[in-house]
Length: 250
Image (cartoon, rainbow, N blue to C red; front, top):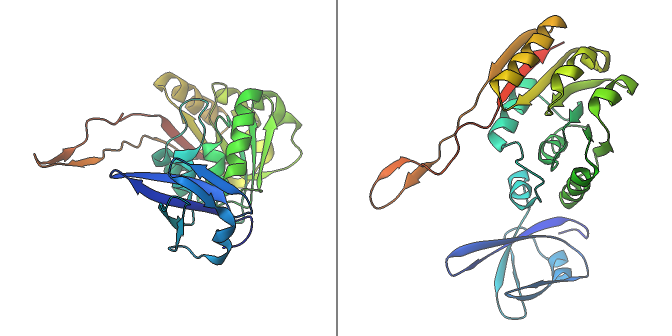
């Protein structure tokens, strides 16, 4: 492993998995299971074992974005992976794209986008939310995500750059749509997230007024399957609805 690289250390205690995301460095990680000398990771590879001073074994892995999603600090309900997946799939975001994101929140969507896109610029109106998002982005080792504090309704008119994809997750999304084409490349995608029918209808009306095309609104429901000695059935512990995704093209 390289110095400065992020790694996931995984161990098991009383049948439960415990995970720690750390950076390869000269520091030590203090846990309930003992102290791990992180400098030892330099000589290791994914799949190798590192042992604490108490003899607890940790398996080394390279963390993926779902790992960062689980470990990220929250400022509210983040966009879920199922919804993020639809945005990525239907906009075709790739390594050549520059993305404008608004409604950063905890930074979860910006982090997923940053792991794929060339560059992400994300706006959050609340400074305390932005600070949490900044720490999450830094913890994920992403240097291509630029976090800005500001109201996207006011800031979008000041932008002098264009983007390949724009993602909006805010209460004022409908007020931004009139300015989107000024900062979105022709043929670029706009993706919005909205939890309520009423907000979604306002977004659709705003898109129609601005003559976006290939507009569609979709909902993704997810059911985990529960396996037990009694039988197999859909889990009853998950919330079905999170929000509506509206995709449009300029």
